[in-house]
Image 1 (tube, helix red, strand yellow):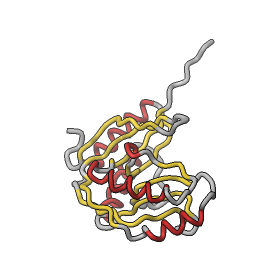
Image 2 (spheres, rainbow, N blue to C red):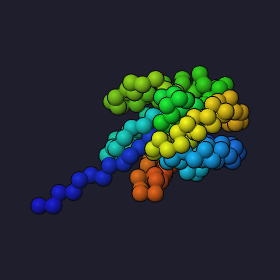
Image 3 (cartoon, one colour):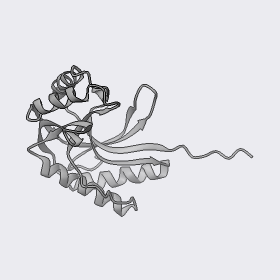
Length: 197
């Protein structure tokens, strides 16, 4: 008997990078690439801020995510953020994930992530244990090749000024993993302060 398994959807909640900042961010990526570091870079069109990664979910659970995010968006208003400084997890000396940080607007970003977490919890999604860090991921280290050169470039960019953007919508996003990297498909874009309207 052929029993079909329900298709799972790899889902996360994001804020997209403003198009006017993409060029500046790509220039920073290029400076990092020029160090010769062996990294898996985020494609420019995929650059985004992840507020909550939910993993693989059946369609019925995806519908609940959309409802929870709509409810969270009604309790939040648009705000400005300033992108500033390149950093790395776990540290600049041992970079595994390289990112651009958020200066002004960070507190509002953290509050928005918490609002989303609380809303998802009402629909029985487990709470996120790790504290939210507002950041834009640029790439992940593949090997330690030219690692010292990368660290030197990271230190030179730790205070770089990138620019401002207005956070005015949340996106429930699906990620399709492919050999050439993930493909992101927006499932629903929800303006802040207006729910799903």
